[in-house]
Length: 86
Image 1 (cartoon, one colour):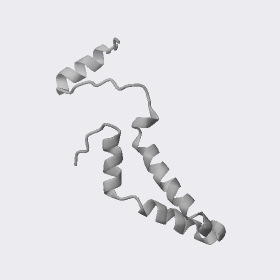
Image 2: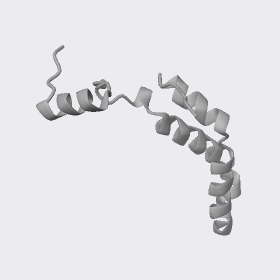
Image 3: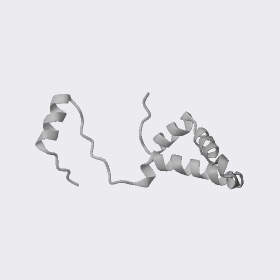
Image 4: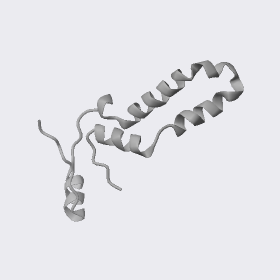
């Protein structure tokens, strides 16, 4: 498969010493945000019985988001094929 590179891209990569990497078309399998939303949604579904009282909805969303740990986020990024760099 051939990729077209504009003259300005070629010039910028040469001057900056950067490397141009052409990405594959979008795939949900390589999207760490989708994996995090799946985890948060699953947490909310497990606690569905608590959603009867509308006053606790913001608290439940906060709890669901708090259940995501930095280690989980790192695994999602690595699962998508990316290197995790601090």
